Length: 333
Image 1 (cartoon, rainbow, N blue to C red):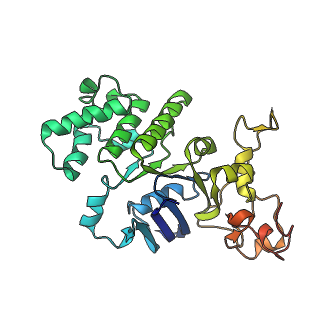
Image 2: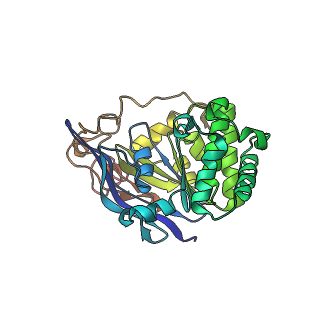
Image 3: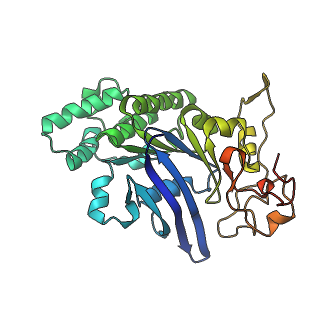
């Protein structure tokens, strides 16, 4: 088994507002092994992106990391000083941000924005750096890279900008690449090309990938292991095949039923939306946080929040259905 590269332990990130405290990430724990892809999935507002930003300590005010540990290659990122963290970002760990048009600086050419990271972390000449930029842009599928590197972001399509973001992220050959909704706002054809590019980079470079997405189709395409978040909590964790074939948590099962074009026993099944909406983090229900939307809810779900319970083959799930003598249906469906 490959060694653990990233070990997130009881991570807590809260947002402090006049209305109260929003627990955006509440005691989230998971591990990422070298060379594997871990997908974090859930609806909007479930804490996926805040978890990713917390790993690199990029949480904006009024957010604050209030507890936990983030061990990268054995070192706690939350205890690093500013210089140590700046040396690590874009070097050993890189992030592909969700919206390239707002992440790229509109007043600098593409080559200058990629060059900044290379010169920050690598001692190479200007010519070597420019040659590397051409190679990077060619690797991520941008045609005529010698010319396009001189463009400004607004002169490129959405797919091209996302490829530039990926080139920036992998320029220093990071051990860990965090991709935050890398296909959002792209059309279906471009999405498929970006996913294929990420798969190629992972296989050719041996990069470890943490993939943040609301799209279970993306998870099925790329991930080895899956962490399901709901209201800032891990509700289920499993290898990808196990999760798709034997989902345990009622939330996970309904996420899977909401995938367009899902096939069951050779026939397409009816698309099922999850009733209701994700509750406000400022007004979470007592007990299980999914109890306002769950069709399998029973009395215990309203009074006490379940822990992560080892169920099928040690596959952890946060649901009272899987605790012995817990009430309801006992061991679950």
